[in-house]
Image (cartoon, rainbow, N blue to C red; front, side, top):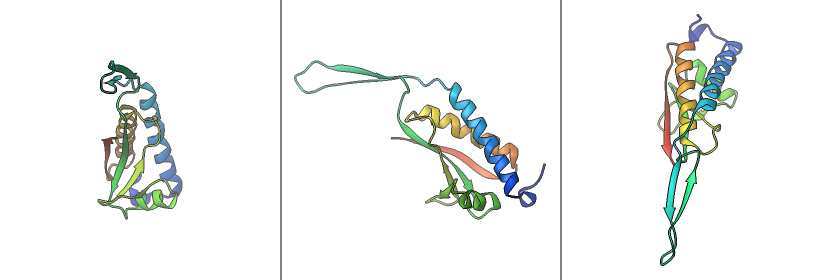
Length: 129
């Protein structure tokens, strides 16, 4: 296995594709817990809706430092952008609005990234909408 210093653009693309494939495989097998929403106008009967994909939210993979060779390559390829709190972030667009699916993707992507480039510092992050 090559170190990050020994990797070239082709190697980085192979790593990114493997991480994305692992993320998609995991996302497709994710079964979110449905969310039930109850509400209604005052003086009206309450209504209930079920959201099959669960709660809404966002997820991303954050990589530090923002000037490592892989982070620079991600920015060059427009696959990541600078993070407000340092490093770069890869935004998870897959999974619709389901935070469960997006988190599953991000966590699988991050785990595979750490296998492919052991010296990388990264984490999966998310927040509710």
